Length: 169
Length: 194
Image (cartoon, each protein chain N blue to C red):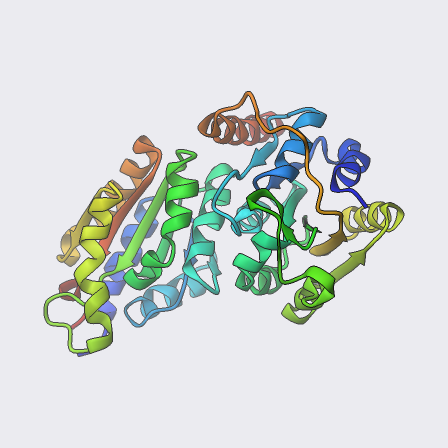
């Protein structure tokens, strides 16, 4: 199984079409092409963090500065960011648009992703974070736009889970 | 050296800058000097004040960003010093008030007590271009003035006593602080464009 370059292009185009010009990210296999495209795009600013929770702060700063921005991270990084999400995004009503590589769900060949995969959706539900799952490359652009729009009207975190169907060939 | 005196000494210089503080004493001491809409108090989410500063500084190159951090908060997110050093926003000054104590939560000693862990050395090792360790008010004020004049990302560690204000409380709801902070930036941008 390989990461889908074509579908990554569709995801990146969706990010661009949503008017995003700032990405905070931490590298992850499914996100490799996306991050390369962001790196090569002179109109995109990308900050790579050491740990995903930093991205919650950086994204909030970018929001205060009026920039449409998204986070790119793996679901395990989301799990490591929960205090920031609760005690900054939710506590202060700051929009946060998270695009999350949904590792460890059905079809997962690697045992190390399985536990995280099982608890990702229950955690989002427990935190009252609205989320959608992206499976279809034709629809992901619209879903990204909807996730960003909702985070801005809700004034809080919203997540789009990037699934295996979308990210792998 | 008292943190409250340090903040008071530089207050005239930071009035028009975007200031992000951590929770507890540093926030209260700044608020008590006179709140402004360009001050954002991160009353929770320890460790993320400097990350907010980074997002602001990279997005607003014409603004000066000042972060008031603490040893407890920085120790919770040491990796952020490496991220800051990598992007080194030249319009940002990161002030770490190191009282060697988790003062707000019982006064337990932090890892920096007795100089066991040196945050200035960590910042230097992370690759921060301008680092200063200050132990007296004079050193602190000079280091801050120098950082504000330099076109370089700066980390200033201020060794302060583990003393905080005798009261806590702000007439400011947390989302209100966020909304006003964002509006301040938006309106300033708009005024500049006209």
